[in-house]
Image 1 (spheres, rainbow, N blue to C red):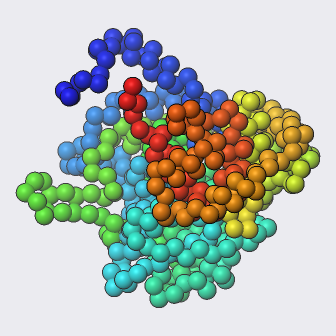
Image 2: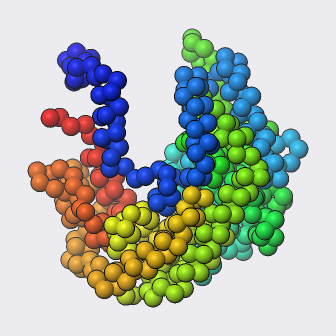
Image 3: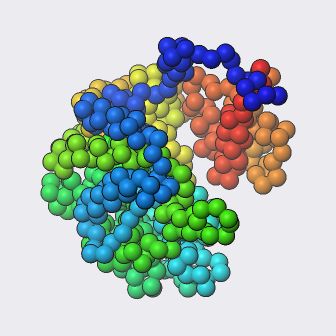
Length: 486
C-alpha cells in the first residue's frame, strides 16, 4: 500500500471548503447561545475575529522552545500575570499555559505527587463532585483517589469530612470553584486550612469559574472565598477558553511559588538529540491558541469582562427563579456562578427533557446519578445566552410538560439484571457488542447507531453501576473511532 493509496484525487480549494461545511452541518452550533455546554460565546464579533486572526497568524509557531519563539514566552508570561491578579496570587507565584483544564489538573496532581517521592502509594482527597479529570490524573499517575461525600442538599464539600480523610499518604486535597456538576463553590478556606495543617498541598479547580467569579465579587460580596487569599491554597487552575471566551484550547495553571511548580517541569538529556525541556505534558505545541487567547483577553479587557460576567450571571439567576414555576423541575443546588443544575421529581426524567430541549433547538447536558446524588440536567450560561434566557425558560417549561406527559423512561429490569451480571474487567469483543446492542447503540451489521432520542439509552446507562457504564462507553468510543474500510 502506498502512502496515498487511500486518498482521493487532490481537491480544489473550493471543494475542500464545501466538504468541510458539509461535515460540520450536523455539529452543535458554537455561537448564538443555544449550546449550553462545551462552548462559550461572548457574543462579541470583534473578539471572535481578532481571536481567529491571531490563531491563524501563529498556528505554525512552536511552543517547544521559548528561545526560538520568544513572542510565545512573552504572551504566556503576560497571561499568567493577568490570571494571577484575578485570583490574588502572592508575590513569587509562578504558572504555565496548558492546552485545557484537564492538562492543568494533570500537572497539579503530578507536581503534588513528585513533591513527596518518599510516599510510595500517594493519595489525593477529593469531594465526590470534583471533576473527572482528577480521576484521569489518578489513573495516569498512579495516585489513589480518596472520595469524600458532599452535603446532599447544598452539594458542597464537607470540610470536616475532607480533613478527616487526610492521612500520611495524602499528597493533595482538592476543592472546586465552582463544581461543574452543580455549579457551587466548595468551602475552600477551611479545606485549605486543614490541608496546610497537615503539610499537604491544596488545589482549587477554578477551570470554569476562574475568569468569571472574580468579576462578580463587587456585586456579590458574600461569595465564598476560594483564591490564593485562602491560606493553604497552593495551586489554582483556570481556563481561558471558557469565560475568557478565547478559542480552544488554553488554560492556566498557577502555583503559589516557583518552588511548588518545579516538580511538574521536565527535562531529559538521556538521548543524543536535543535536550528535552518542557513546562507542560506537551512538547511540540502550536502557538496559535496561546496567541488567540492573548489577543482576545487584551481586546475584551477587565471592564468588559465584568459586564459579560454579570450578564451571564443574571441569566443564570433568572432561569433559576423561573424553574420554581415549572412543575416537576427543581434546582439541584443554588447556583454560585453561571452554571445551573436541575433535577426532576418522579413524574419525569432529565433524559427526556434533554431530548425535548434538543427538538426545540437547545443542547442541554444530562448528567447521570452518582452515589446518593440524583441525575441532573446541566446548563452553562455564557454572555450570548442571556438574550435568550426568557425563551430558554419557556422551552424548558414546555419540554418538562412533554416529559411529564410521556412519563419517566422505564428501563426493563431484565436488561439491568443482564448487564449487571457482566464483569467490566473481563469484557471481550463479543460481550462489548452485546452490551452495545443491549444499550440500543448497535445498528444493522454490528455498526454503531445513535437513536434519534437518547433518553432510553441514557436511562439505561444511569441504571448501571459506574464501572460498567464506563466499560460500555469505552466500547462505544472504541468502535466509533475506527476508520471505515469501505
